[in-house]
Length: 200
Image 1 (tube, helix red, strand yellow):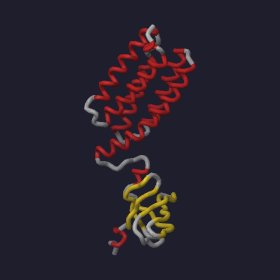
Image 2 (cartoon, rainbow, N blue to C red):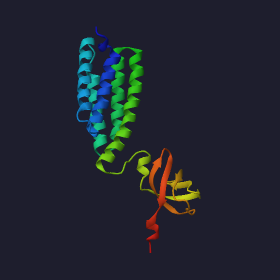
Image 3 (cartoon, rainbow, N blue to C red):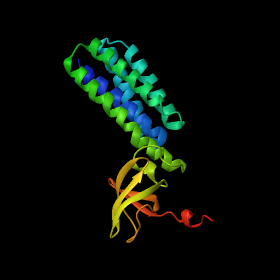
């Protein structure tokens, strides 16, 4: 049998097909990711036939793909956890059918990797649609915090009960409300909340 029909490679082909399909769904790749996903899916299907492995786990992998797509395209972000659970179970079923330790290892890493991929893709969807991101530090942009300590353009800001390092105007009094305008790694960039000065 061909090396390309090895169970590990068959599973990896299916996993990359899922990842590329998700990328094609949310990002303008002009069909490159989508066509690559189709080619990898065909390769995975050929490997399944050659090895006489069950198609059922791959049917559930396709179902997980649908759930991840729903998560990325709708406000219902709990679908990612359902998708991850379905993908993990399908991966375990395939590894058990293949009967190799390498499949179990690859299945574990692939499940974690695909689950993690959803987060940056969700941020990308938010930017393309012009809506505020719901995940990561980008989601803090526009939120209002209170200065706890400040000296020469940097200090500490309390935001949603958490303390963050921040940079901004040279002089900001303690207890001043500030608005998050961005971030540099784990340090927030803030400016004075001018809405506070407009209050009568």
